[in-house]
Image (cartoon, rainbow, N blue to C red):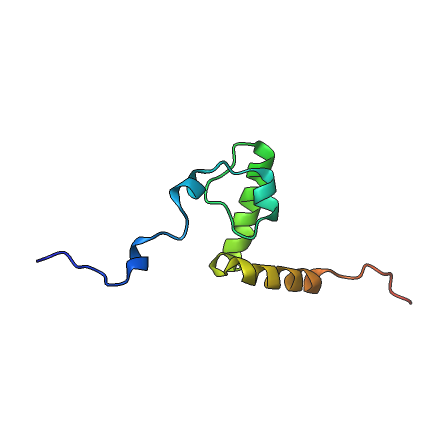
Length: 90
């Protein structure tokens, strides 16, 4: 059976280059970039935040969103979870 070929040239290109994937992950990229780094960081503090971010993104399916969609969704989700800690008037 002959090997199958795909007519779409973009099929053989990756979304992230090898250089991008190989880059060292820092605390700033974990906290502030909309796109989650693939590699876990070497720093213990950055690794802590990286694990928390992976857990949150996978739990709530945020890892399936494009970076621009995350920028729209995260502030909305944050504003709905922030509660007012005012004392009730009895």
